[in-house]
Length: 426
Image (cartoon, rainbow, N blue to C red; front, side, top):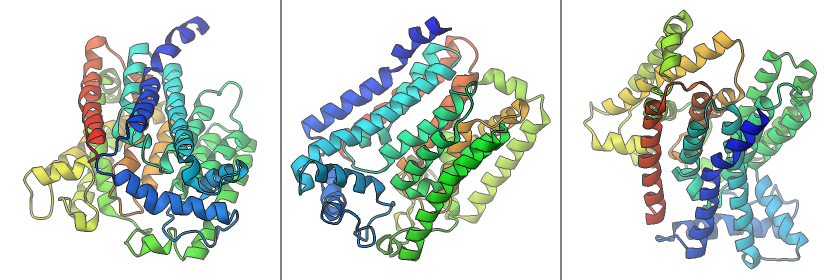
């Protein structure tokens, strides 16, 4: 078993290695054709870093355009202060390197997860390439955001839950990762539900209690910012209609995006579908997701409309290019319905195994939290969707080489489009 692990682990790191190389080359060549990334840094990143260099504990007076709790920015500013720098521009390249390294490390850990959990090496390699060369990780090489480090800890929590079952799950380790995750990006607070559920269902009562201590600290920090801002985001973003509250079109977007990806994963899982169709819980779960998708499509417009944040996603682009029925898009409905069989399979498999997979739970709780905001950007939900689908497929894929071809086609098309889109600056 150990020899087999060492034989396949180096191969699966092709994806993270290409991602790291792309980050280095893109930054070295100054890939920013429309200067949109540089403009974002000048508008948001540099003023925030300047503030925390000048005011190490000035969270109350932080710039009003902060969307996340500024733990990550405070950490970077602290590094600059310790090194004796008074302006972020003095070492901005170093900070970008650090930022990209967090992302590469996170996706490298994801590749390690695939290597340990996958039934075969080739599937793990293909899925690693899919995640590492999709549009969001590529943006990480130049876009100075909080998602790259946040997903490092997101994946670390999954790894702690899934790779150490024999030694026992450790509440303090998972809790510290969860607390860091929320400090970096408070919109990920909904994921704190997942580790609690995993620990409880596996009867790790003491570890669940320890984890809840860390989760309680995270909740208090978020409550403090909620009191200070009068909401879950700063007043700057509240004025731009970014606020908490169930957004049906955000939920519909996630269903449709899941359905678009799910079609490529179903053939490798054909054996699982054949088994699942003999279990009533599969049909119940699938029917429930069908109903939810139809209801979402009925209650909210689904055509392209940038005025209400239905833009910046392949889903809304498809809606723009295809026929409409009034304010609704039939293609969005078809894609949303396409998610139902895959989601039904994932739920029924956990019911049959009498367990909750941490990767499925983490992605589900994160995406559920995204239902509570007006969601214009695909990059916030693409990664957790692909993480959930990829790890589930790695665990249960069956069949010969022919069954993997849909995944190869997905990598070749989707990742090629991602690279072209990134290099074009659009």
